[in-house]
Length: 307
Ligand code: 3PG
Image 1 (cartoon, protein in one colour):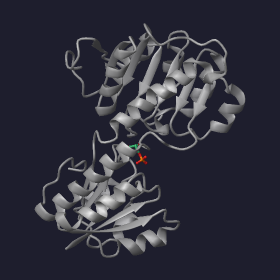
Image 2: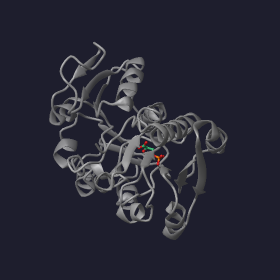
Image 3: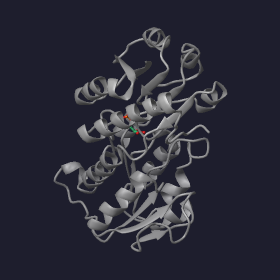
């Protein structure tokens, strides 16, 4: 029976790991857990004899893969796989997958939690503004972006979407406008939701010019990756525009400085929590187990990201 290591510095819920342990046998695999590990050595040791690996945001690079001579598949229980060296995995013949959509709802709901908190001035009692009738531009129109669009329509917002993979007329809803460029998206929408992965093209791609081009009372919500924002240029834009707000799930590296200087305009979650719901946790963990077992037993690679 092939062995799957679930290595998570930030563990899945108990319900999820119990499900994994109980279901493993029926999927013809063995599951071993390594949770809240505190050293790389612990991880290296656990990787010695496993064919499958399930992780969350855990960094898996060449060093880790070289410690796992039998490794055939890595599944990232979640959407973003920038924590995995996909190119090196490909060279080694290791399949990498993610579990798209499984935590999308959690992130979409959080987007509105963060947005409303900012528009109501962090619940300070100071006068805020309403989102009904305001415009929302969604950058990155995948599973999360599409859910955000639906919820925004429920709030009576005007919605536009921009994505390199999106073509005109393909937003899936007549009420969601297609936007061809990032520049237009920022210039025409008061609220922007960032839902793009961190790639060489997107890292530092949201900077001063885009932020300064936004309409009055601008709010940028980042539930994607901190790296997509150009942090110095964000600070400069915040210093020049007191009506610009930036709220993020994962604090930027200059969070302390931003909070001290522009406390009313920014908010950062205590730790990354977009996918921290019972449902998202379970769905992502269950999908990760099913996908890795299917690959190990049938060589079927659903959602491979390193072809
Ligand atoms: C994702 O990419 O799926 C989210 O960022 C969730 O990441 P997490 O599993 O580390 O919470």
